[in-house]
Length: 180
Image 1 (cartoon, rainbow, N blue to C red):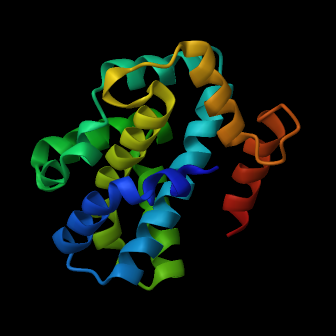
Image 2 (cartoon, rainbow, N blue to C red):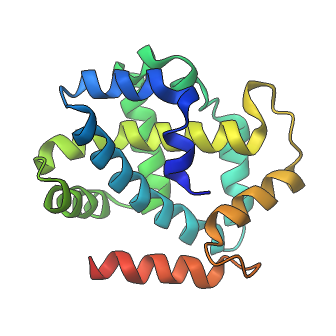
């Protein structure tokens, strides 16, 4: 399972549709943009979880952020507060705006969409990514999963080769993203 599997789950169809309409895209353009931006965010999240306390920081953000609301109530995706929250998320994941700009330029090259449009999409996709992670890791709105269960899910999500360690996978994702 990866971040795009979570985002494009049928339970999030209304949110994807709202995103598509908000940015005046067709379905294929929206899927391409969301997929590529989410993959870059996944690399950043994976790298952050490797740092000391990074996994705990991610869980704290998931538990306290009420992020699932962005997928549960798609009308929120068009609000300024969502963009601001997304920009805060980007700051934590990427560290600075230059990385976000690089991600937008790289996605523009892959999708053919304008990088200025992708820069506007990126905070919304970041909010959606955190929402999808929150719903899956915490067990939805009720937060029924324990941290141990959630740790297993997060580790599994970033452990693409199923060797029990996400370290080699995160390094590989980072290396591959630099090559693209």
